[in-house]
Image (cartoon, rainbow, N blue to C red):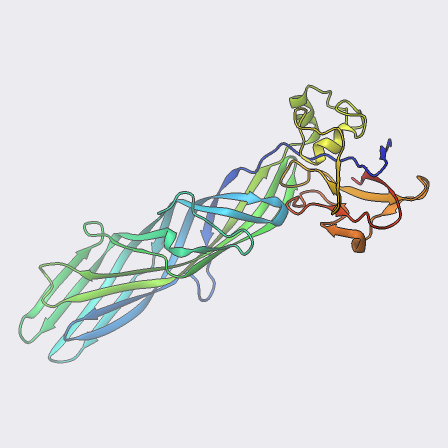
Amino acid sequence: MRVFIQVLMVVIPLLINAQTPNRATLTLVQERGFNEFDMDLDVQLIGGSDDTSRLTGSVQVEVNIIPGISSTDQLTILNANVRGSDVDLSSGGFFANYSFTSKGLRFSLRSILDPGVVDPETGEFDASQYEITADRGVLEGSAYTLLTGGQEIDFNFADEPFSGVGGGTGKITVTPSRTVGSRVYFNLAVELPLSLDQAIDTEQSPVAADVKIDGIMKAVGETFIEVADYASWAAQQGFPSQSENAFQLWPSASNYHYFALGFSRASAPDQLFDFSQAGATLKTAGEFALGSLEIQWSEDLKTWSQVPAIAMASGRSAITYLDSLAEPSIVKMDQAKRYLRIIRLD
């Protein structure tokens, strides 16, 4: 394997493939504490009651995977097919009472902001960016008071939907999964606290009533990103597919090094290190590495070793596939004069 050497200079390459939003269909989990939405009914002069509706279904989302840190800076809810189990609500005594059953509950979800903003460092987001609507199902039963007597009530959510927004902080977790060809897969887990609180407004009701539905929705699934391989990158540059070891851009670095660091034919620099008082900074043009590289140094051009962590002013001397390139790799040059090189590890 041919290795290029530079006196206080180095060779590197990255990818031209930019991160792209990807879609996923997430399935609501059956875990304790999640998707168990409390439904509270408070009827004036009679009292309150509550029951739990267990949600099932799926949510389609769009994210913007940042593979270098296994995170996303966006979460957009495209649509949802969420169902709630039936609940029974009753309260009161001899002088006033009610008994209701909620059947066929269906919920829709949407992003108020598009795209929804996520902190990529923590995966947390403001839950108020998302809205939930109970738009299917009925709340039916009867209510009785001494003043009004008994009366049947049938409230249809399709006619008068209940809507509410998320409250507090939600979280999305992105975990690397597998690689198949040019596709890199990631597992997603979304936790979104939601709440609905609305008065039942119907002429049938003998007394005022208020319904509150809240809980934490959690859904999981898988998405992927397409990562360009060397052959596709080479085709875009007009190079043969088997040209990794060729020096067709600059004599200081091979085609593969420029590819691995995110450079294109138009953006490739003649040298891969930039020297300043801070040290020797490895140049990159991508958000994440498309190959595994290692920065090495030598005093005599004969014996080479990986630059130790203590000699790095920033970043790392070992760069592996899909590593984030957000933090620059800077080698301290305040020691003895050394030669630098970058070698391919994969």
